[in-house]
Length: 152
Image 1: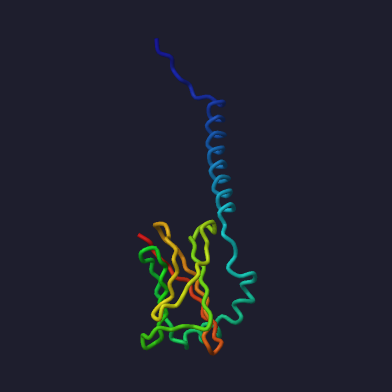
Image 2 (image 1 turned 30 degrees about the horizontal axis):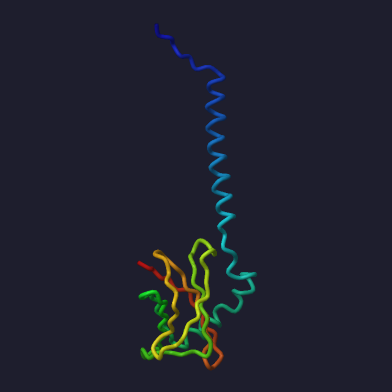
């Protein structure tokens, strides 16, 4: 014996409430994960930082430096070269290495200059990494650059 199913008001209400419960639940989960994995701010006040951006960029570009980041045999290699392709050894250099989406893996390796490039022993896990490089030329010009690094 078969029974005919009839869609009544209670069924429609249950479908409606269930659909919105799923949507709200997913939105809450996404919002929670977005806040929990937020690595922080780049600058405290972006307006103040923007006021000197063009001057700092022009001074940095006048140095003519290019930077190449590689991960080779458990080492991070940062090769800084001038406009003619010669190695550059700035007055100061520091770099932070980390993932784009989380600050959990951030680290500050101890780089040493070997005459051609800066190297640090740090066996990075496979994946994409960022290198936030900060250096100062001997004339006092600040040099900052974010580099992408893929470890295979």
